[in-house]
Image 1 (cartoon, rainbow, N blue to C red):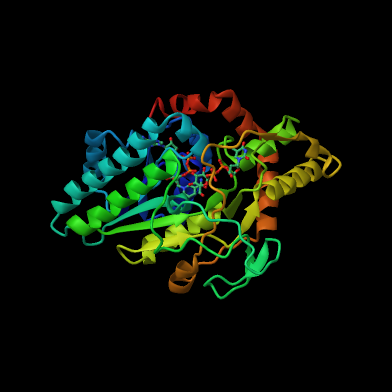
Image 2 (image 1 turned 120 degrees about the horizontal axis):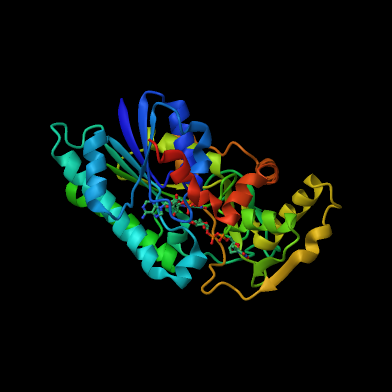
Length: 377
Ligand code: NAD
Ligand code: DAU
């Protein structure tokens, strides 16, 4: 029996990781530790909430005493740490909360794991602290056209495989950190603490840096779910700047599969980049989303293009992210399972078919779920 804490399991990516682990490993006990901030929604886990190998604990990762108590109560062997404040725009308005949760919260998780594991007869043996981070810590890449061709152009990066890119440079694991937003600065700091716990105390840690995720259960403040919902209700689509920024998109279940693989097979103290070589200019992805929503709603494809509204750019808006995940592909054999066209079709369908989920989130009713479902447990 392995007892594994997954922090932030009620959020977007965390809920996919919890679902995968609970279903795939009935011999594990998965303890979902989540504060249920605005981004935490237990309805994301309705399908597994009664499974015998799943426990939900409402707790703040910054509350060291409570976290220590959870380690002792459940004899925790492993941690997959996702809990964080995750939205760049919020970090620009409220950097303190990001430093508190992402830095102090991670430190509190690390210290609790250290104090608990150090006292065990086997110490670090069989233990693992896996920290989920972001590609944003590497900073921003430029848009370039080295071959004099209008990007995107076909390139090979170091993967050896051909793919489309908007520049000749990619984020590799050996790049120095250059975060720009308060969000990415806080994530960068938390990554440094995780590595410091390995280097100073010998804690078995792993860090991964992933690109933009998309898929079901993403909070509708992020580009794709926000725009799907706005198109449905024919509300304006606020495109920052000229919509020229480039993001590298990965289907969330492929991220969860990578986390599973790395948690079990990754080398201690290593960093792995996770991404699917799938760069898109914002304006192009927005057009794909509009066409897909229109088609699935039986509207004339493209008729909602008029909703596109260019607005003031995000402060410090990073131009381009592009992950080189060659190391993960080469060393552990991970590959994204979905082509982007398939993934975006699946995602749009999911949001349109789960309007009740979206209404629950946008009305704020989802925040009552914990009281309703857990008050008698
Ligand atoms: P999210 O905002 O959807 O979910 C975050 C979860 O953490 C929520 O359930 C929230 O309640 C919980 N949480 C926040 N503060 C907490 C606290 N103090 N104590 C306990 N729980 C708390 O985030 P997400 O998009 O699922 O991202 C999850 C992780 O993955 C984050 O660490 C993020 O930096 C990283 N990441 C996200 C992406 C992406 O595209 N979304 C890409 C790469 C990495
Ligand atoms: O790269 C990984 C990161 O991806 C994660 O670490 C973050 O947690 C996650 O939020 C995401 O960050 P982004 O800032 O890239 O995601 P967001 O969905 O907020 O924005 C995607 C792009 O779309 C970005 O260039 C800003 C732009 N945008 C976003 C919103 C919400 C708009 O043009 N209009 C919008 O309304």
